[in-house]
Image (cartoon, rainbow, N blue to C red; front, top):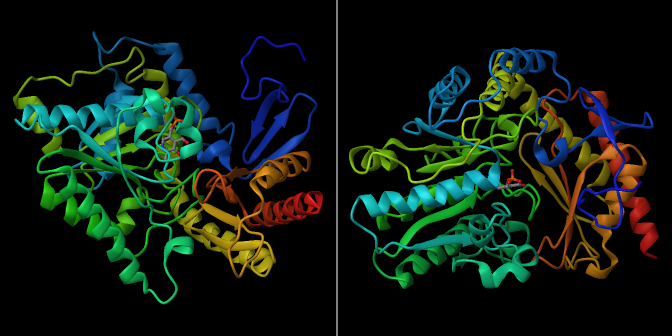
Length: 444
Ligand SMILES: Cc1ncc(COP(=O)(O)O)c(C=O)c1O
């Protein structure tokens, strides 16, 4: 097909998507694809939900857009009320943007302005983790720690301090307990803040459960409690990135709930609007916002589409359906089923090193050798082969390379819609394992 669109590949135009029904997407040739990754953990409610469509139609008929420089809107107010009422205690201030990267940019600037307003302008540094992803705009990319994504843009990026990810499968040493491994990571964070100098660090950014770059890696027990304590001791803000793992994906509305900590800033996107409209948000603790309210009286930021009424109406409808239909219970039940089924089907596979995740957020890490955990030769692009074979077989999943260090390692991420049933889960695991085997055979 001739195209003027700059597609993700400049050499190939993907099939045209024309419809969606529940967990299925349909292309222009009538082919049906089982959406086992919700795109990239976006479509939490599946496709074409009638109540979300009705809410969007109603909003568009009334008013599609009004600039936030002049007006607020009922959907934005109601969605913020909804989020604030269900957020970890104190996270009662909501800033609506159009996606995850914008949310991270806003969080970084809000954190910096907070310190300027409380008289600590010497705080200029952020700490991120290796193998993290926080978005592709320059600020978010700078904080992220995936070398492949950063490399050619590195000269344009602000300097960010870097610590290790919490990735027990590869980094917990033989003979080291989980508690000792966790403490080693916490000591590293503490030392990094101390080495930066007193009052130099603004915030520590981390995905609560790491998504795209590592593949559904939950933290070890006590990691975030320890992080919270270190941040408090040094006056550093904890910025939780829940763009991928939040809004119910791990079985609770926010993944931090399972860690027993309250971040200072938390960003959400993807599952907030479920893909019905582009929307993201920063949830800010009252103690972060209060100095701005009492000081300059404004957050010095803004975009044309802040708090877009149609996007907020769509997200509000998505969130109301999830709550009314008790879909987070389904995430927990189906999540346990998905994990059991992956372990059953792939647990003994010679090239499967690890199966992990939380809720309906799961990943399989592939290796050359289970004993040594040696990865498959990166040049073979196993992840791309799996994606292509799964796609040809009507399965949408999210394989990624560079799991270990941005270059080596392969994993496949699954994030099906919260409405997935057990037959569809079986089909996902069946099609995935066939795609993995076909891709491995093609390496030979
Ligand atoms: C954890 C995390 N943060 C931020 C982003 C960026 O979000 P967006 O692609 O909506 O800009 C992503 C996207 O995958 C993500 O997974």
